[in-house]
Image (cartoon, rainbow over the protein chains, first blue to last red):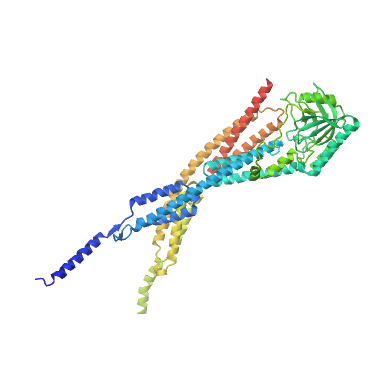
Length: 403
Length: 198
């Protein structure tokens, strides 16, 4: 007979309960769907260039993911009670949440960078267009030589990088292009700054007044060429009686320094020979006495100071001429008019007629204005509502205002 | 008696110290592996994978620091070593991936370079036909542009030589675009000139 059946029963129950409990304890494993979900998220993070757009956050995620993977590999026999959370599940969920935040951040940053780069490149392209247009306006494309194309290539690179999502490269190319334009603006300001120099403009104005006075005193014709406006004015008895559009040398607004530099000389000259049809390839022409004593002095001084090439020559054969035989003619520094205008001038001009060539007669001349605009930043230009064509003076190619 | 105790304790102490030694040489090797990947261009051509490798290395360093912070008898660098070994093991895969992506970028850069060179040649051929007329400025400017484009091809080659294929490709594309624009400008000038001759 069992003396303690009740106790035995209790003991049995306890044993059974413990066994059930022990059996219910299980080996906890990482839920495969959650692992897969984190892996998918990781691939999306890679695709979103998270290393570039959220480097610190992505770095931390990568560290956490690597550590967790290591645990998944080594701690695959974690035993837990049913009421306990699966540590893998908790950590994977936390990692997934972290990855999602990184992905959102990377996407936001990438979008912001893209928007910034798009705006930057668009602004740069606008600046280049304005710059190019203004440089053309003052006929200084040649002056800048190869630099212009170099800048254009940088702008194109900035766009190309931007389109590929290489925003850092895009910004770098854009910055270089900006710097180049600023440097070119400085170069043009240095070479053409006299157009904005009040004292120089006053001097030119005096030269023009003297030409008009001479015409009045001698009851004769005098010609004045103003390079900034690209116009030739005929004075008779001290009065401006006709004004014609002209074309200058290919570096016309520059100060002439030596032969073949394409600049049109500035100074007071005289017509020393009249070349009629058959005597010139340019329809009709007035040969000027360039180089005069002032030109010679300037040339010698420039050569001594090394401002011009040692082999440079001063040149000559500067004319005011027509435009016949367009294919053969070359403007290396001459003043060219339409043939009708040359006919009109031929009736007024004679050997000895003074020809005054100056840069500008007002401080707000086109060259000075354009130079100031070259210095103006893009934002300033936008604020002013400046457009590409707003400062362009229409070139009257056909005819002239006559008084 | 003292001698016996010392003889018994010494190996145990050496064992403990030995286990508590930081694997600095292995860390050095892993760091070198990451640096090799960086030098191979992994940061540029496989940025995310490179970030992962760096992350693993940082993990190992952190683990090592954690162990170092413990009392010497409780230090265990087993996990650190495991992580460092993973860095080393992952590096060849990354190098391979980098090399593959670099080759792809190189091929694209060379293709773009070829296209740019052909476009420049065509532009130059057209420039030599440019009318030497009144528009000296235009002709001179066009010639300047053609010279600049030819010079830019050297920049493309320089970028290729420096294995900066992304830059080379962007430069080449820019040169090609500009050459096409220049050709079009010269064609326009030639057409204008032909019209005037008639």
